[in-house]
Amino acid sequence: MTVSLTINGDQHTSTAAGWESLLSVMRDEIGLRGSKDACDQGECGSCSVVLDGTLVCSCLIMIGDCEDASITTVEGLAGSGALHAVQEALLDEGGVQCGFCTPGFVVAGAHLLEANPHPTEDEIREALSGNICRCTGYGGILRALELLSNAPSGGDA
Amino acid sequence: MDFVRAKDVAEAIAAKAERPDAEFLAGGTDLMVAVNLDDHRPQSVIGLRHVAELQQMDDTRIGAGVTWDRLERAPQRALAQAARTVGSPQIRAAGTIGGNVGTASPAGDGLAWIAALDAGIEVASVERGRRIVPWAEFFVGVKRTSLAADEMITAVVLPDEQIEAQEFAKVGSRNTMVISTVSCVVARVGSGYRVALGSVAPTPMRAFQAEEMLNDETSPSPAAIAEFGRLVAAEVRPITDHRSTEAYRRHAAGVLAGRLLERCLSS
Ligand SMILES: Cc1cc2nc3c(=O)[nH]c(=O)nc-3n(C[C@H](O)[C@H](O)[C@H](O)COP(=O)(O)OP(=O)(O)OC[C@H]3O[C@@H](n4cnc5c(N)ncnc54)[C@H](O)[C@@H]3O)c2cc1C
Ligand code: FES
Ligand code: FES
Image (cartoon, rainbow over the protein chains, first blue to last red):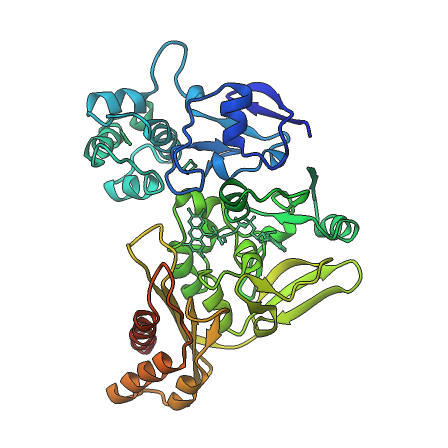
């Protein structure tokens, strides 16, 4: 089947089988490999994207259900040449080691700050609770989001 | 694969009548796991994400398409407590109560609540219109329901009863992102008590002997509460599997039921 969707503002068409996941279409058909495939079962959050305003695991979204959908991936967050504030903060606070989980945390963190520019520590932990990191012990990731939360302009820092 | 994006219930059931083999897709958090991990290959799918009616909820009727993140703020306290324990923010944003009912896993966290409050499952088809199936007739086995090939689930419907208190809890191998080892809801409805459990039988179940023992007692003694837990543990029918043992599930069911009864009494 043919599905037309918008990813990071760009129009794309997929001809993959309708049951394929949005994640596999993005990675294998469209060539957007920022979203990672670590578990393929909704457990790890490394494939997190924003679909029509909602943070979801793209491994659990059926491509057949994506006609006219609008999706933001990690590739859509960094502006022309510049990193997104969440990416900068993760670098500053040592929130990245192997980096496999990082795109998911960036998308989830940016999604939180967009709705709530000054989240509390509990709100940060809650918002990132669907994302698993096996390397950092989360300290650097939490500090990065706290840094942004405490900035005067919040997530827009 | 053929995909129908239904815009309302009429369209969804018309599509299903034409394609008895079609599968409904709500949040996809169960269906896509089957696709990704079990090589399930649906031939025909009816997408429900854009059916507005399914997303409506009020005090006595919860549309099948209401997602767990909205149920976290539901007025029904035990349902909100259950919703809070489902998966992660990403899973709660996509997964629906209708999908939980449709999957009918013994571990479905919404199902003990449905059983405790004696809710019905509203289903719809072109042939028979709408009807409400009592939960005990709807869930017939592990991941098996009595839903007919031409039917869909439209809502979970509560009877018109005065619910005085309702409490949910579950036990699992860790605190979050965990499938229930045992789940339990205790409710005080009118002057009686209800206790329902998940993951301890092929379907959600009530422990009727424990309910009857308490009868209409407004303030059960500590001995009665302990006896209540013992009866629940005796009545459940758990198995040993990769998640837990029969003995542990039995024990945990009794402990949870006693604890939730105490919470109902103090609320
Ligand atoms: C990482 C992860 C964690 C999870 N954690 C939990 C948890 O803690 N507790 C829990 O209970 N569950 C959990 N689940 C399972 C799942 O999220 C829930 O069962 C959820 O409620 C399913 O809803 P859905 O809308 O995603 O269903 P879908 O996957 O869209 O559908 C599930 C089934 O129901 C059928 N269906 C859906 N809607 C209808 C309808 N209206 N009429 C007829 N049939 C229908 C579908 O055809 C399919 O067979 C988890 C899943 C994942 C991936
Ligand atoms: S790859 Fe999607 S949640 Fe792990
Ligand atoms: S940095 Fe390696 S998984 Fe998070």
